[in-house]
Amino acid sequence: MFKRRRALIALQVALANCVSAAATAESYDLGRTPTSAAIAAWDIAIGPLGAELPTGHGTAEAGADLFAQKCAMCHGATGREGPDPVLAGGQNTLATDKPIRTIGSYWPYATTIFDYVRRAMPLQAPGSLRPDEVYALTAYLLYANGIIEHATIIDGASLPQVLMPNRHGFVVAPRD
Amino acid sequence: MDTTKQQGGPATAHGARSPAETSARLVDPLGDPRSTQSLTPLQDLHGIITPSGLHFERHHAGVPQIKPEAHRLLLHGLVNDAKIFTVEDIKRFPATTKNYFIECSGNGYREWNGPIGQSVQETHGLTSCSEWTGVPLKHLLGEAHIAPGAAWVVAEGADGAAMTRSVPLDKCLDDVLVAYAQNGEMLRPEQGYPLRLLVPGWEGNISVKWLRRLKVVDRPYQTREETSKYTDLMPDGSAKQFTFVMHAKSVITYPSGKHKLPGPGFYEIRGLAWSGRGRITRVEVSTDDGASWQECRLQGPVLDKCHTRFSCDWRWQGKATIIQSRCTDESGYRQSTRTELQAAQGKLPSYHYNAIQRWRIDASGEASNV
Image 1 (tube, rainbow over the protein chains, first blue to last red):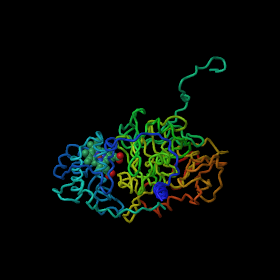
Image 2 (image 1 turned 120 degrees about the vertical axis):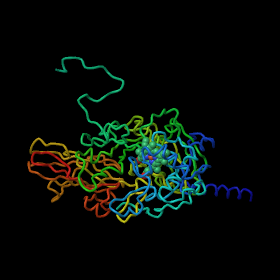
Image 3 (image 1 turned 180 degrees about the horizontal axis):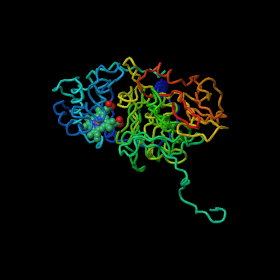
Image 4 (image 1 turned 135 degrees about the vertical axis):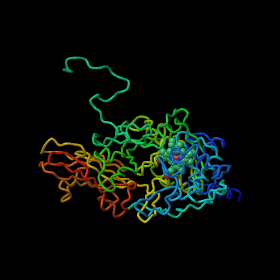
């Protein structure tokens, strides 16, 4: 009886491992187990549910100053003037022959702004912004696109809730 | 100088090509310190392998200088046993060596609505082909034991862009490599030294270079490079997402734009064909502006998701004409014309341009893009 129960558990474990499909029954015993601190230090990818968003918050008000200091020289005073990518405007242009793809007109998820700005911007000092600064800049970019109010607080709870204008504009389909 | 009448140079620790050979990548835009791409001189190459130093480059935050002993690859997320690997650990796994092309999905972008580039380097130079060595990603995932719910893997680079793409788990368990070597030596810095992802047949951007992290997740993470970029906006305003596969494409590399034929007579037309869907099964060439097509020789080896060299004989009569090639892959897909591509995808220049390339040969033998 006891033995049978153990066999059953073994079977369940085996089935659970089957989910992994990979035909790798044998272990090569290479690599170490990372510490949770090591994982946390690198775990910067923010999914569309925003589960990985750090603590912190910001508003467009605070973000406007930061944008002027750290971003405007490349993206323009309001994010529309360039020379580097245009970050605001362009709504209702996607179906025209001069589409303007910006955060407001094209990006399907607000979480992508936080993820990308934190990892890659400003161009000459990527990864230098603190979470509060990234939240504030994200809020500013959403505000500049008319998606949120000036005083809306953007944090780990509110950011994933922001409905982007082009949220339903994408289809997963192969090219013909 | 008669080289048979004197001693040559001594043996050297690391060889260099003849000083007479000057073939080079085209750095675009030349001289800009922020330049983020360079194109392969396909017109100068033979066979199917791109010399590592001539492999095209595309990066989003420059080429990082990474010390291999300090580099780590973290594998975590929806796995039962998260792992962190050194480069030496990765090299100890059973290795796989395969030839694959990598093509940027922006290759030929500017050609969408008409000829722009002058040479084949300008029109097609964002594709290259190498022998890659690495560990199949499925071995690493096997070590970490994937947990239920896993469906995608987020791959991240150690460059200033911390380049990030979501890769479907099925593909990761199929033919994706974590590569450390290219053409028999360790990767070049601009190709991801010391580790890169190699996602065969798919748009180049997803083969994340300077790979430092793989996070197993339940859904695509909607990164900037799979939403704002590398998506295909259609005329109706909708956009196609995750259009990973590079469609079959061929191009005549000799004679091609900027070449000049010395006079009428025999020429071997040569070119390359490749497909993200598998092997090339057929290449045809027309030397009379599409009135007739002749079957080309495929020079072996003809490999899966790899550049394939083709050739055919041509006797040029000295009259102006247009030459072009079209290929078919093992899925049955045949390369189409620019007009057909525009009809299917619209006139907005986009990623995945793969139309037939036409070269005009004028009566003086000069070749140009038409």
